[in-house]
Amino acid sequence: MGSRTALVEDLMERFPHVPREAVFKEDLLRGGVAFDPSALSDNEDGEVKPKSYFIFSFDHGTLPELGEAALRRPPEEIILTGGPYDLRRTVVSVRVNPASPYRVAADDDGVLGLYLDGKRIADVGVPPMPEYYRHTLANGKSVMEVAPTIQWGYLIYLTVFRVCQYFGAKEECQYCDINHNWRQHKAAGRPYTGVKDVEEVLEALEIIDRYDTAKASTAYTLTGGAITKTVSGRDEADFYGHYAKAIEERFPGRWIGKVVAQALPRDDVQRFKDYGVQIYHPNYEVWDEYLFKMYCPGKERYVGRDEWHKRILDSAEVFGARNVIPNFVAGVEMAEPFGFTTVDEAIASTTEGLRFFMSHGITPRFTTWCPEPTTPLGKANPQGAPLEYHIRLLEAYRATMDEFGLSSPPGYGEPGPGRAVFSVSSFMDSLPAGESTTV
Figure 1 (cartoon, rainbow, N blue to C red):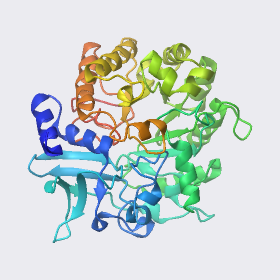
Figure 2 (figure 1 turned 135 degrees about the vertical axis):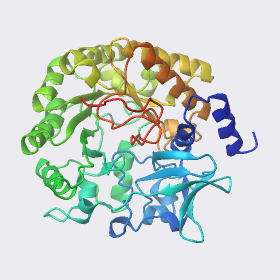
Figure 3 (figure 1 turned 120 degrees about the vertical axis):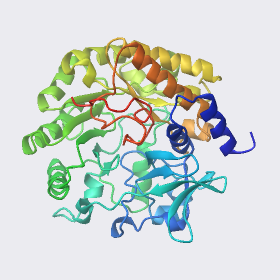
């Protein structure tokens, strides 16, 4: 096909049950978007909430390669509405790619729009600077550095350990740039705290709680790199868990507490529960046995795929199946050199994983793979997975949920096109609207 527009329109026609908003969203997430200087933020001194780089870079270039977008950050997220496709409100996480056919720019009247192949296809809204970002901690650190919010303010993202102890080519997940992202921010002289002090986290949360008068922030996620030894003398369950304990003691019931960690033994998972965590995300990354071994070598070496899956099932006995929500990285199934070469094969494999977990009442979710260029898979696959894979995955995901009588998982806000705020994939945009998502 001669243009990206033709590809997108063909997929919308072929898969009419997938919301058109999700087609554009997945394409923006997998391939990134360019920003005209007129669409960049003034960092923390402006009126637009800037991109916080909350854990990974989620960019298609290193900071030095992004040009002005590295100096004046783009917005954290954008909202698409209207245009010739009459798009309903769609929240999209920003992944910068100066070479993308999608571009955000202001028109002659200063109104932002999304352009594809040179044609304006949607109006663009940007997140306003939240009042809590305008205040600093007593030590001068910004709230954005310690406790950034994403998903249009719904989720406080607490990356309390900014690096991963799976280190080097023989251990790092082959699609993950957490360690590089740490290095590039330090090299650029940006504040990027490696291990966040629990008192700093509590102070930042107090600022958010005080100034978030609309109570837009509803959940927090505690996460960071894998811990194979200890950090500050604590193992993984105790390290992440002691933040949850402190938060729940200081702010009982204020937010839904979530932890993204490795698939840990049941006794460790119980500690999370005892500390007050409500939702557990033991991410399984990729379903296929061979690809897990090749693309997650550290996790295969330290835990192993079969044991990883057993621990996920065991954790459902602690949290309840509905509150165990493992993530996978959608698209790495088709990554060279070892991935599937056809969309049919990749979808069949991923669906097998979905059916395995959903048959036990566990509802996975997914992040759309961004092929960051400093990762082995990003270097080998700069275009990511085909857009058709991502669209068919949305179709298969909803069909599998229907097969097992499951509804949207808790802790993600409202589902449905025009309602969803989850910004790093379209799974919530593609589910029926109007379901309860409480714990």
